[in-house]
Image 1 (tube, one colour):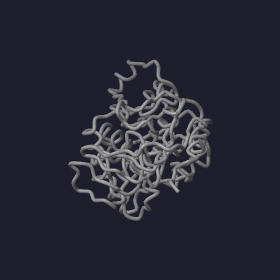
Image 2: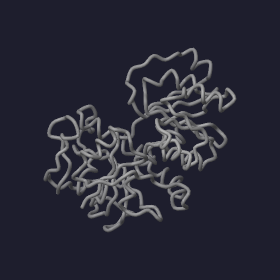
Image 3: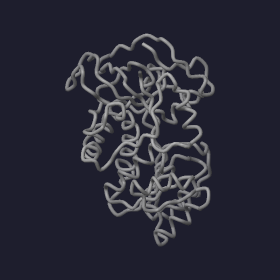
Length: 326
C-alpha cells in the first residue's frame, strides 16, 4: 500500500507519499481500507519530530479515518467485512489501509457520507471526554472554548449548546466568529482586539466561565484561571502557547477551581474504548438527529498531505481539513 511517511523531521515538504508494507490486523483488530483521514495539530508535531507515536504503533501520521472494513483479526465480533466505519487511531490514518482496535470503531452516522465521517472521531472523543466526562459541563453553565472555529472548537460549540450550556468562543477574525455564532455561540470574543477575561466577566455579571476548554497551554494559564467561575474547571488539551507557565495558586484556591490536562493518543486501549463507547451513546444520536454536524473546511488528496499541514499552520481554516484517497 501507499502511506505518508516522514523520512526526516521538517516542514510540510518532509511528508512523502511512498510504498510501504500492508498492515496486518492483530488480536482484537480490524483492517480498514481508508477512504479519508483528517489533519490534526498533533500530526504537525509528529512531522516536526516532537510527538513520536507510542512504541509498536504505526509510524505514519493520522489520528482518525473513515473507510470500509477489509478483514477481521482474531477475536473480533460485532463487525463484518464491508462495514462502513470511522475510527479513532493511535496513528496510520494517512494511508490506504490501517489496522484498528475494534473498540475504537464507530459506525458512520446517519446522513453523513463516508469520506466526511473522518472529521468526527478525534473531535468528538476529545470534546466529550474532556468537557463532559472530566469537566462535567451541565445545562445552564457557561462554557468557554478557545479557537472556536477549529475542528475541536466547532464540535465543542455544538455539543455544549446541545446540552443547554451558554457558549463563549475566542477566534481571531470576524468571519470565524460569525461562523461560531451560526453554530450557536452566545458570546463572541476576538482575541486580537478584546481581553477574554474581561469579556467573560462582563457577559456573566462577574461570575466567570464554569468550564474552559483550552488549546493554548502556558500562554493562557493564569488568564484562564482568572476567567474561571467559583468551582470552575479548566481542561487543557493543547500547548500552542507553550509548555511552561506560572500559576497563581491563590487565585485557583480562592475559586475552588480544578485544572486537568489530557491527550488521547497514549491512553490504554481500554480507556480509549470507553471514550469511544461514550461518544457512540451520547454524541452519535445528536448527529443522527441532525443537531450536531461535522464542519469541513476543505478536502485534499491524501498524497498532498503537505498542503493540508500548510493550511493548519496558516490557521485560515474553519473546521476540519480532510485527506482523501483517490
